[in-house]
Image (cartoon, rainbow, N blue to C red; front, side, top):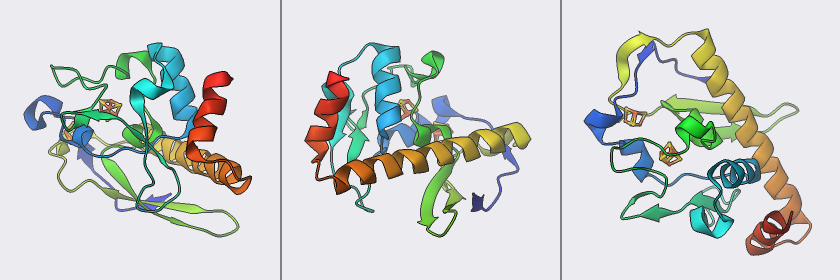
Length: 166
Ligand code: SF4
Ligand code: SF4
């Protein structure tokens, strides 16, 4: 993983009214499995089939009134205490900017410019960097899983059906 570092960060979700939870968020199949199990939800309750800009992962979190379906009225994430947040939510305050393919693919991340928590709070130390790197890696593995199934000719809806049946 490469990218510009963040020196300090503290999520200020009340101040920004969970700004990042209003954006489109891709889901890997692992994310979907974990959320479904932890939150006891059916896949159709929170997954939307939508090809994204990069055209790789066609699953995103459903939104209601422009906000993630798991965002509560107090701006807290329902999945956070369940330990089931999607990989791309765990890489905050970074955004995935691109994947550089090679023998060992490299994920490039960049700080989310509009995140008001950047520059505040404790030092963004090794543990936090490790979490971001692991989550980015999980996302990449998830991406590969979807690509593999798509190459077998499965449509996104069929992939979800297989998940539901598993
Ligand atoms: S990560 Fe940043 S943008 Fe997202 S809720 Fe926290 S402070 Fe707001
Ligand atoms: S899953 Fe949680 S952190 Fe991720 S967008 Fe939804 S409310 Fe925000």
